[in-house]
Amino acid sequence: MKILFVCLGNICRSPTADGVFRTYVERAGLTDQVSVDSAGTAAWHIGKSPDPRSEQAAYERGYDLSLLRARQVLLEDFSEFDLILAMDSENYSNLLSLCPDECKPKVKMFLSYSRIATDGDVPDPYYGGHSGFEDVLDLVESASEGLLAYVQSKLC
Image (cartoon, rainbow, N blue to C red; front, side):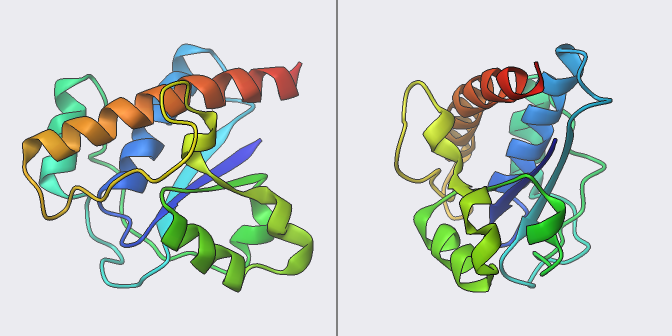
């Protein structure tokens, strides 16, 4: 199963989800069955590392984002990935507008897998302080737990 996490610039929320979920997949022993990536709907940060504040907050919780680099969503992503998970409703709409009709069922909101916040947006922490990055991690961890359970049920 191939999963793509998507936010706007691919330097805060989606790389955080990528790093956290990748760790969950590794801990579950599913790296040979599940691959993870992240992208942005905008091209502003292509090739850049995640925001240092995202990296630091993730590191403090045991996640490594250091090898990730921002990229933009590509048309072929819609056929390559099994799930394309938007971090917020704006990027969800952007993805649907780019997506071929036959692939639209693959596009979902990431928080739909969360046990604490099943709808809504993962807020963009870019213009906030450290607590915003912590809040993002709380939401991402919760949604990653639910997503992992979903993935495990599909792989069995």
